[in-house]
Image (tube, rainbow, N blue to C red; front, side, top):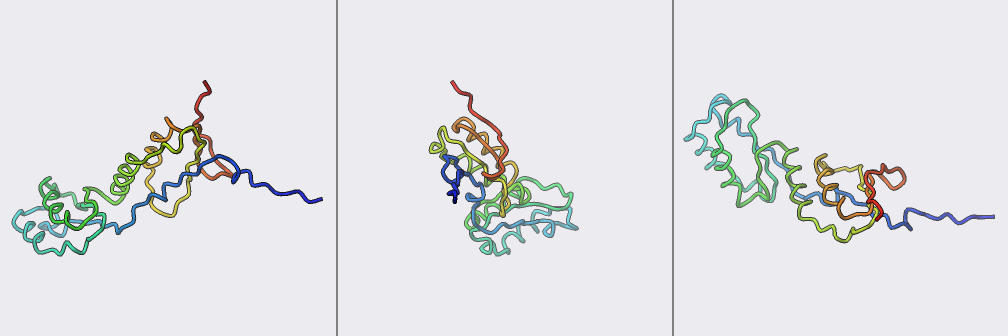
Length: 170
């Protein structure tokens, strides 16, 4: 007697949401200005402006750029603003911070602009494993976006999920 195997997960109304699917393609660049500073600590305006003018900014075409200074130098806001004016024609996005901050900002923008209306009153599982650098903060933002809309939220895989939220029955 053979029994047909039924894939209950495939037949369920469960929607899998993978943040990795929204990962913005493009090179990530950490641009450290320490080498443009005197002894890595002092920003001399004339030298800094000269280095910015001579630098080939086109090499960061279609890249996401995080401007930073890895030393304890005090960098005036105008310095990062000046570099941004040079990067603006080329880079997809310019921020001040490290690559983690960059990813967090990218995902914040993506999630804020996301239309989740198609998930209205559906059970949703947020996939946990990813091969791309999805920041932890993105999961929190996603939950805040989904919770008012969905019927239920889970985390993990369909075969081993952790329940997070279930809309109360009226």
